Length: 145
Image 1 (cartoon, rainbow, N blue to C red):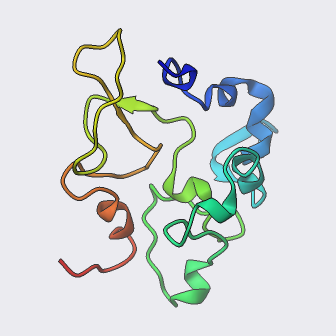
Image 2 (cartoon, helix red, strand yellow; image 1 turned 30 degrees about the vertical axis):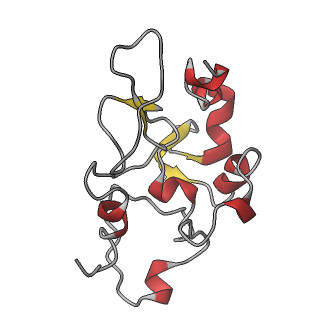
């Protein structure tokens, strides 16, 4: 079994010293969970290469500027400067594995300690076992069915 399957590859986010890399400070000076730094993507890009992400991973777009009165749901947070960042669609503190499929046809990870296996979530804020990430994209975009 691959080492990364034993625990979340984002376990370093549990260390308090990592908080200011993504979250801006709140009133008391401690990181505010709902406020994301415009530089938060830099932390993601230390491990994930931008050029390998393709068109399905838009960042730096400002929905309010690009689409006029774009209605971005509250569960898809923008950076404090109004830009889409990695954390708009992915939740770094989320579950790495789930008992529920994230995408159609997704095969479970082989885990000796879990009967029936578990499915990678890709840390998506929204997904559907039948339609995959379509539910995430449709939160802001009208998609033909």
